Image 1 (tube, rainbow, N blue to C red):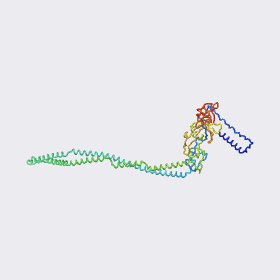
Image 2: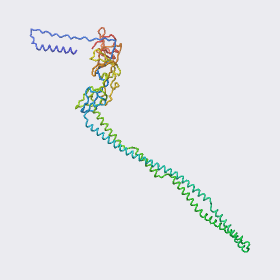
Image 3: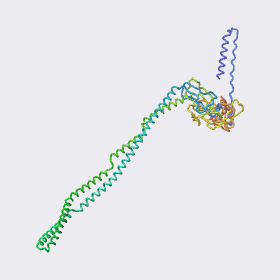
Image 4: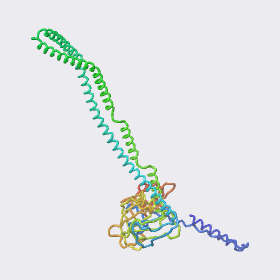
Length: 501
C-alpha cells in the first residue's frame, strides 16, 4: 500500500514538473487529459490447513573445541610484566604462564614471611620457657605431695603411738589407784604394835630371869628375838608410812601423765602440718597456670601474621596465571607492557585429545535444552555429511556446568555437545558447525506456515475464506512451531483455506 502511494505521488509530481516546463497553451489548442494508471492490487497468498508432522527444532552455531579447554585470566587489573608462553606451547600443571608487575606486592610478601617467622620464633621460645617452668612446677608438686603424704603417714603413726601412751598412762593410774597404801600402813602399824607388846613381855621375862640363873639364857634369847621382830616391824611401818605419804604424789603424777597423753593425742589427731598442705595447693596452682600455655597474645600475633601473609600471597596469586592442567596453549592475548583487565581471558589452554562442540547460547534457548538431548551436526565444509551427538553439559543453572576449579579461570557459560562414538574424528579446533536439537515433535497434527498467522494486541487469529469467497477471522490456539510449520490446536479444521496477510 505504501509503495503504491509513493508511486502515485511520484507520478503526479512528474506531471506537474512537465507542465511547468511546457509553454502555455494558446486559445486554439485543446488540452489533452493526462491518463492516471489504474492501481494494481496484488493477490494475497492463500494457505491450506494441513495435517502432518510438526517439529520444534533449535538451531545454533558452535565451534569445535577440545573436551577440556579453559580460558585463563588474571584476578586483578594491572600491567603485564612477563608472558612465558606462546600459542602452541606445551605446559605442565602449575607452570606460571604470565605475571603482572607486582614488585611492591612481592616485597610485602617477603616482609610478611619475615614477620611470620619472627612471631613463630617468639611463640616457640615462649613455649620452651613455659614447658621448662611446667616441668619444674610438676616436680615441685610431686615433692610437695610426697612430703604431705609422708607427714600424713607419720601423723597416723603418731596418733597410734599417742593413743598407746594414753592407754598405758591410764593403766598405771588405775593400778596406782587400785593399790591403796593406807591398808598397807594400817597393817604395818598393827604388826608394829604386836611386836612392841611382845618386846615388852620379853623385857619383863628377861628382868625376871635375872633372879633365876636357870632361866636367864632362855629369857635373854627370847628378848633378843622380840627385839629383832620389833625392829623389823618398825622398819616395815616406816616403809609403809613413807609409801602412804608418796601415794598421793604418785597419783597426781600419773593423773598429769594421763592428761599429757590426752593432749598429745588431740594434737597429732588434728592433722599434718598446715604449711605442707598450703605448699601443695600453691604447687597445684602453679601447674594449672602453666598448663594454660603461652601468652595468647603471642599466638594471636602468629595468626595475624599468617593471615596477612595468606592475604598477600592470594593477591600475588591473583597477579599470576597458572596452568591448571597439562595441555597446549591455544590462544594468547596478553602482551608484556600492556594493561590487563581483571578476569578478562587472555590465555586459552586446552588438553590434547578428543574434541567436542562449544556453543554460546542465549537464556531463551538454554531454557529449552537439557543435558543428554540428541543433536544433529552439519559442517559447512563437509556438505552432505551429517554427524550426530548429544548435549553433554549445560552451564549453571541450566545444567551441571559452572565455575572452573582453578581460581584464574572465568565462569564457564558454554554449552558442550559431545559427538557420538566414532564421529567427530579429523576435526580441527575452531571449525564451525550448525547444530540442530529437536525440542518436541508432534505427529498427525494440524499446521499452517508461520506467515499465515496474524497477531494483533496479543491476539492470534487467521482469516478463513470459504468457497464463495467470504472471509472470516478466527482465533487460533497454537502449539509447537518449527521453521516452516506452526501447530494449530484449536480454531480451524483440516482443508480450510487461509488468506495470508
